[in-house]
Amino acid sequence: MKITKDIQYIGVNDHEVDLFEGQYAVPNGMAYNSYAVVDEKIAIFDTVDARFGEEWLGNIKNTLGNKAPDYLIVQHMEPDHSANIRRFAEAYPNAVIVSSKQAFGMMKNFFGTDFADRQLIVGEGSTLSLGRHQLTFVTAPMVHWPEVIVTYDSTDKVLFSADGFGKFGALDVEEDWACEARRYYIGIVGKFGAQVQALLKKASALDIQIICPLHGPVLTENLGYYINLYDIWSGYRVESEGVVIAYTSIYGNTKQAVLELAELLKAKGCPKVVINDLARCDMAEAVEDAFRYGKLVLATTTYNNEIFPFMRDFILHLTERNFQKRTVGFIENGTWAPVATKVMKGLLEKCKELTYTEATVKIMSALNEQSRAQLEALARELCRGN
Image (tube, rainbow, N blue to C red; front, side, top):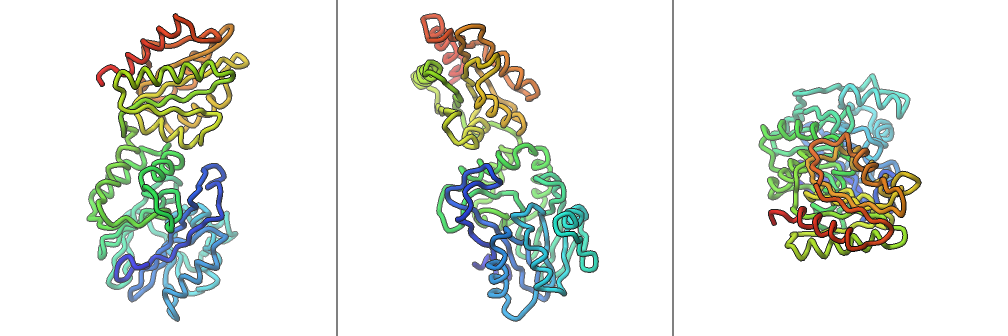
């Protein structure tokens, strides 16, 4: 796949993987992207997952013919992108490996060598000329590892963005970009919003016409759409108005309260209501919803003087990704001594800029007139302003 006259896609599609990073379901597979810039000097951008090394080296050979690359540019050391550095080094013994100082330290850990006799260390503002193409390196620490660099080609106005602007899904499957990019971003990069904001600020000074990420499609049109979404996500701002209800239920009484609340919200004009049964849904999808929408209701039972495990897990997923700037309401259930709301608030203490609803719902085993009145009050408060 030609991206520009001199830039060629040489990545691979993975339809063998079921869980990316051992936890994210990827029913449409995964793409591990790599690129060749063919100029007076030839640069390869990043390698691919270890299982596809032979295919990737074949792609290089098919693209370059009898030519040999002069450089391997390593932007990110996570193994889905770096696993074939040694194989490349053996296949092309005269090629120079270009990366950050921290990345070479990681190579030593992964491969037992930092390729000291053939390394070129680059940092913020470092440049590399391939002939017609002039590359400038930009550091992107903690987006989402500390060694990350991204690269700007001022000739074709291309940003090689490492894991930035990536998404789940192989490139031979058509699907909505935003849905899987959002789940990818929040799940993998979401903790590092401040660092992404810093990178976006650097990128705003560049004339970018094409974005080449390490996962997902090359972005060539309407780049403002993608950049705006990244600005929203990394700023922890509300992307869509609506209420997410995340719940656990043992015997169905808490679920009944959730369903009644959802109907009340819809009747009062709430623009969107999303319900996630945390025991059965894709946890990453539930976390994505919590970050996408402006309001969240947590509904669970008191369990062993604590909360139900799936709810605790969900809240920990939120807090470790810096969940913030949202309105949160609570529904608790307990046949005796209910403490679920107290426990949930305690888990959320380190979150910034959360607003808790005044109305809360306490169910003593099953809904009654009093708890239904509390549901009505909660729905009214959540829909205020709609």
